Every structure is written in C-alpha cells, then in structure tokens.
Image (cartoon, rainbow, N blue to C red; front, side, top):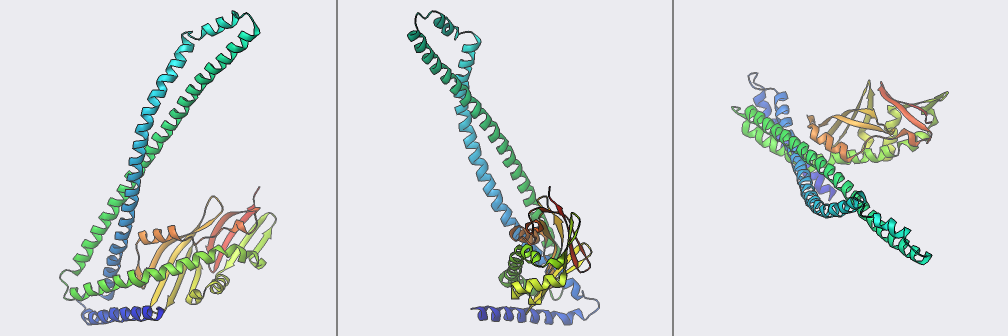
Length: 361
C-alpha cells in the first residue's frame, strides 16, 4: 500500500515537473514574469485552499455556538417562568414577617398552659420556619443561577459575534487572494498551463503534502513530551549557580535526541539562532521548513510558535500554522525535571537553547 502511495506521489511530482518545464521556456523571454512570480501565484492559490478550510472550521464553530445559544435561551425562558412563581412565594414569606403576620406564634407560646402544648407548638413553629427558609433559599438559589445563565448567554453571544467577525475576515481574504490570482493569470499566454499547475499542486498538497506535514508535527510533539526525561539524564546540560539553574541545549544534541526517537528526523534538524528557531527537513520529493520562536507560559511551560511554514518552497497561510499549533504541542515543560524548579526565561542563541530556572518557593 505504501509503495502504491509513493508511486502515486512520484507520478504527481513528475506531472508537476512536466507542467513546470513547459512553462520555463516562456519565462526565458525577459518581457515575461520570472519564476518568482509563478511561485507567488502558486502560494496565493494554496492560501486560498487553506483559508477555505479555516472558513469551514469557523462555520462549524459558528453552528455549534448558535445551537448552544438557542438551547441556553430556551432554558433561560423556562427558568424565568419558574423563578417568577418562586418569587411570589418568597414575597409572601417576607411580607408575613414584615407585617407581623407571624406575631401570633409568639402570643401562642406565652399562652401555653403546659410543656406538652409548648413542645407541640415548637414542632409546629419549626415546620413553618423550615418551610419559610426552604422557600427563601430556593428563590435565592434560582435567582443566582438565573444571573449566571444570563452572564453565560452574554458570553456565548459575544463568542458568536467574534466568530462571525473572523468568518467575514477570512472570506474577505479569500476573495482578495482569488482576485489577485485571477489578475495575475489574466493576459498571460501560459495561463492555461499555470492553472493546470495550480490544480496539480493543490491536489498534491491536499492528498500528500498535508499528511506529511502532520506526520512531522505529530512525531515532534511526541518527542518533545520526552524532553524533560532526556534532559534529566544528561547532567552536562544543566549548570548550577547558587539557587539559579541554567539549562543549555545544543542544537546538535537535540537533533541526535530527535533521531533516536524517530527515523523520520534522519534528514531533519533544529537550528537555533538569535531569538528564532528554524526547523527544516527534506525527504524524497518534499521539503518542509518551520520558522518560529519559544515563549514562556505562566505555568512554566515553554511553547513553540510557528511564525512561518514553508512546504516545497511555498509559504502556507497563518490559518494553517494556527491549526497545527492547536493540534500539536511542540513545546515542553522543564519544571517536570525537578518539581521544586520553575522556569524563569527562555531564549535561543547561536546554536543553543537557553532556559533559566530558579527555586519555586
């Protein structure tokens, strides 16, 4: 099965190459656009496809919130009706105490002739007071729940508004990008060939490319989950200065660690630069590059953010990067090495990932 898929991928790539080669002679003319322009057209077309996927995801989110909102409104209406009846009962109880309607109870106590009557009255009073307390407590509880549900309803309504705004933004982006692609293609003698190339590359990305990218992200996520244990077993990377600890992870060691975890990383590597991380790899007919940076979260975890994702030379849109970030965690938590340590800072320098830790009091 894998052999069939590889042959299919190779056939697609050959088809793409054939389309590309038929376009190259046209590009030899100085008056026609250069290869870079074709790359940009392909990039825009791929972004249209990816943002369309984000639109579908947002629409599903919108539908889910709309359904939740409708259910909440129905429950709120039912609750309002129930609390109205309870409000009347609570009002009667409060009026009874305010107007002195319960004064006869005290009079009855003072007029008892024996202990037997007194205990009977006290039992009767306890029953009345318990009923009054239950009525007031029930009303108070329902009133608080009603206010909470109103607040939740307002939150859901705001979420729906935000989602609709995001949806409009992404739709506008797609329209603008598609117009740019149409404008770029109009008037070109090779527009039909370019459209064929666009379709072929888009299909290649959807059928094979995104699957491969997700494989890398999944493998990276699993490997990063094992990093604290690996670091703990290599004392050379951790230096101590009083109550302060410094973790220095050389890119060479990290790359060796990754290759031990999964052979997919044999042609894959991390490069640490000043405040940036470049993760790149190539396998057969595919190349992938992630440009990103680390941030320190309040819980001490270190998160990796993808600033750029490039597949076979084409940059994918932010929607694709965010979706992959949501699904796969490429960070790690150094505090898992030693419970009493907390992460204070994270930086990347030439060839090093530097994490500062301190004692957690």
